[in-house]
Image (cartoon, rainbow, N blue to C red; front, side):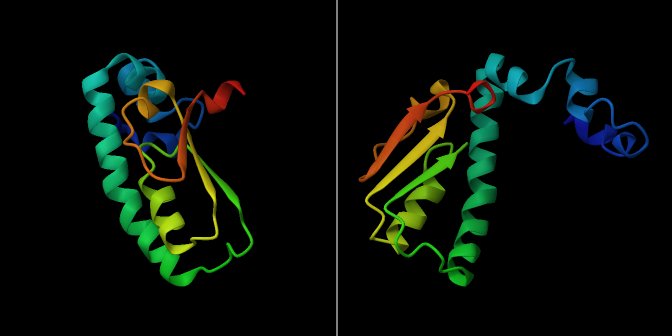
Amino acid sequence: MRAWTMVHEAINDSSTEPFVKANGEPAYDYYGKNLEMNSLMLNAMSGVFVPFMKAILEGYDGLQGVKTLVDVGGCGGDCLKMIMEKHSSIQLGINFDLPEVVEKAPEIPRIKHVGGDMFKI
């Protein structure tokens, strides 16, 4: 929350992210060390992205012919599941996120959860 009060400063000084100024480290490092905050952030992200994905799926129909789809940073796989429910031709969904995130992800038919770090590939 402290970072929100510093967002306006990023306009004048883009050399440091507000989150780093407020917490002394990048967000991904912070959430990796603070599991309770990580859980809250993941739940918040799902609450934000699921309604957006619903709207996207209502207006976009460009996935015909896709057999495999990867969601990088897919948290628990909620958005990937929604896409695959609409597009049954997608045979495999790969939900790629940090190991500590995907280890808590629920089993979802046709979705494989893969742990890794998108910044270290």
